[in-house]
Length: 386
Image 1 (cartoon, rainbow, N blue to C red):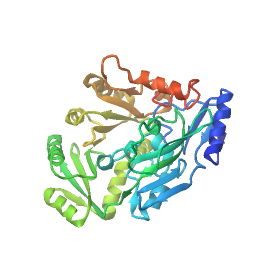
Image 2: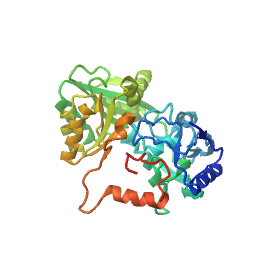
Image 3: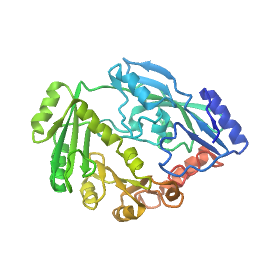
Image 4: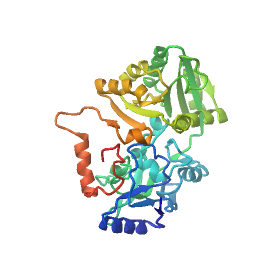
């Protein structure tokens, strides 16, 4: 595969313009770490990597903002900020391989979603290149932005089907003074869900609240469950958690770091072990998380304060009953990862039934028509539809 790596945003925009003028099919990616995610990668006339757009463009430590090229490795960005006691509050899977632009294009997040939100909550500005060769700037370098519609938000989660992100401005957070993780184990799911409800109704504001099945959680016995609650703040704050959650096991230091890395990277590790594996992402209201978890016999990680649950299957046949359950219960469901042959032939996104007459894909197709009327860019990458 021949890959073009433009060295500047202007060069990338020019490549897009020339390719579109010739009606060439175009694939765009960062480091291709999410190649098994979403719709299949269809062969194209030209392949463009943003990897060379890897500069730190602006860093205002005191203003809590940073602007970087879309091709910057995500771990390099976090390393720069960490040396200054700060972070972009995202902990996505594939972090060691991912570029900043790839994380945003796939809208990846991890356990910290509970405390800080997703990429749409952390991106305050963006520059992107369109197929007519223009560079569009949206948002800015201030945490509060009230300029109106932010077109950059459309590109987060679009899998490169609309335009190409060339740089991103992030809101930056200070690293917590310290963190600790409190883990509850129980043989019965009801005990874990009860504990979770108590925490969510309390004054505590954890960074992460994950429910883990066996084969996922550290120390979870066969048939058992775990609830992992991560807290950050001053020593006084952590002491408050220790008093409120005194029945939990406590993870600190390197043990805690290793635990959450295991949670963040469970998906790539699972796929490495199971090349035919299927990962479903199920979205429910908080009250329905227990309904879903009771139906599962496969490994799962539930971001149980956000309503997002990841379920891991060795094959689609094993996943089918849960997909059908999502249809029955009007949950959203996405085939997050699956082998190429499956993604080329099956429905990959089950949006919840919305208001009468509304259609998510109809709206998305209209947006696609505005950006890419000839359907040249990353065809079918948005879950096989767009």
